[in-house]
Image (cartoon, rainbow, N blue to C red; front, top):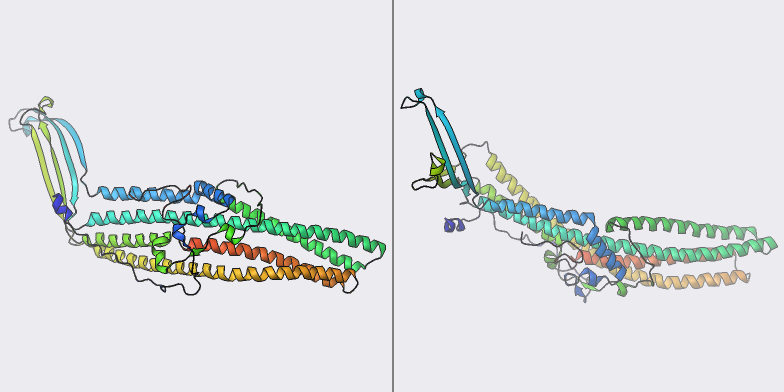
Length: 466
């Protein structure tokens, strides 16, 4: 029987990856050198020790990641239920009965009291999986489990990315607040000086009002940045599942101090590295297995019910010689008319497989775009940082010269006003561009699948073998 069952072939269509729905190369946007993202764990990619500590805390306490881990356990249990269908359910039963039979119902014409006792070991309605229906259901449950495991890694990677992006946003706002605070202090001193000049008649009230406008603008900017900083802090708290402990940054992080240079490899590498693509492929395999189960439903179902034990009219005779009892009841069933239910079930399974194919291809295309967007962002944001760095130096010198010209009576204060306003704007833009460049590096790491071959850091570990 075991050999017969081992030879049962599945009716599920063989799995074949659909053709790659994207080009075979990234084009000119890809850097020539760098390490593969899949070979770099997040704790190696992110150099900042405070950021690594926050990511580790999030992987331990984040509720979304915990839900993803519980979904794995749910899928694992569902797989074990389906796998159990391949084996007979064996149980022990014991029963006894006593009955009084009236004389007119008895051949002897006398009232009789009959007893029966039975103890046995039996299997009930064990389906012989000749057509692979039960095995296909088991395979579908297994692929669903593996998809949930890949989805868990995708959630972990997304969480790492969110924590890193939020942390960088907070550091950007801290730097911008510091710059705005310095500007506010400088303009407060200028306001004090101009008020004194107006009092002694050394300057016009118009110049004082212009200085007050600059001062109020700086105050408004500080308030806006503080509000954004508070919102980002709340977002980080939600990601961590606890109150974040952020120490002041000692220095401004540079690109090379925070992230490593990554090589995107080939688009086909995404099939092995991106957890969302891996999950979509497992869902596609599960859909194919369900087709096998739907096809097998068109063939007869053979089930066995049997029992082996001992029976006796008296309790004491259960284990005496000659009390052996057995029963064997095979059954075969094949619906002749079901109103088209089996045909509809097969059609449903095939449509769902086509949906899985479309979802798989869409996931690959989205991943391809994510990588291209991140590569383009790193390239052009680096150019913007370079331009803004030179522009900041120029605006600082312009503001200095404008102030010098005004002090010597060679220019109106409006020139100083414009120079200082544009200097502050460029300083803020430069900080934003630096943060955006770092964020593009984080996005590239996530787009390439990151080091997610297995859960890292504090991520809950799960086994690939349920």
